[in-house]
Length: 186
Image (cartoon, rainbow, N blue to C red; front, top):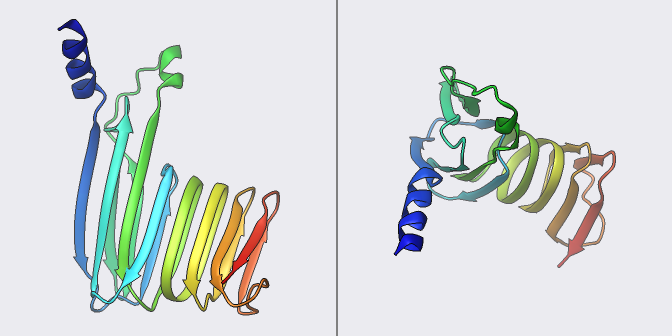
């Protein structure tokens, strides 16, 4: 009985927070994403003219991060930010607290996509007009039809699937300083 009580208490204390948002994207031409604290990012495309985001945070500081969106003309911006009124405990133990932020996005086909992330596991699939991706660390898997644009990384391993040959197309520039670039042809 004590174990069940402890499990219930811990699940309430260290549970997860989820946000689900939807935006009309019928007039949107480009999507700009900035996720400096996300540990996992999944981006897919579909035929629906809506942007759907599921944001989940877990851990002891799960309330620290939120999503903020804005539309400027034909550009849609979605960014992860720290809660401004957060009271940092300031003790030595707070440096060892963990938080995991995961975001899953579904966006319309054929848009420009710009993404910045620090250390994440990225899964990106679908059809895009152009990609501009900057990752610092982690790993990325791309299953993109006719990829165009620029992908840069400091140490992330970059994997490409769904391509016709073992070489990257000429219309995409891929660079990683310390990571690996691996093409997995069909």
